[in-house]
Image (cartoon, rainbow, N blue to C red; front, side, top):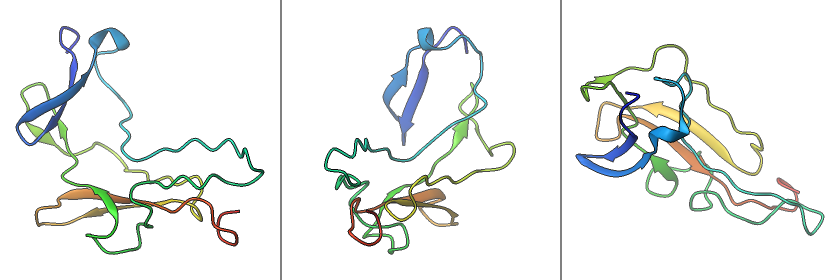
Length: 124
């Protein structure tokens, strides 16, 4: 809605927003969830900065970082499915990875993500 900020909600609580002044469009064609690190290779190698809690997404829930119950809502706050394909991108999969999943339990649509960063053999 061009007259309102874009809200970020968790359960029934708005925990943040993107100011409407940041956007000229009335809608978005891309939404991204995940993690990001800065890698300046200051020591001539990949950074040792962890993503998530430092565990790769192949580890079980409870050990790996995750975002659950990801959803899209219209202006009436009615939930709807993403139109089109959901793309999963990990630019350095030996350092950090990401998995998209769906379950019918309390996790709903979710991603697991993370990684340890620098590793002498896997992420030089």
